[in-house]
Length: 81
Image (cartoon, rainbow, N blue to C red):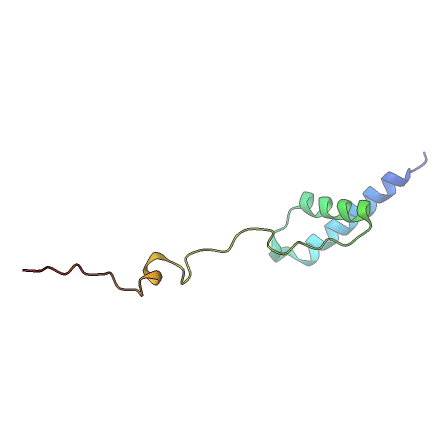
């Protein structure tokens, strides 16, 4: 039985993805996500580089909250008598 070029690529990608998973277990990556990255890299012939600004947005709970806009103090209403 002859092994096709596509099978060779698949075997190579699976080997590389399992190696990445075994060397970086604390990352908790899934096998399928690594396989898709390797396949995309192989098809385009270029390394995978994320675009700036892509991915999950940063948390807005830092100093940009509603209290930070008013200086951290609530405005008091003055009563005129």
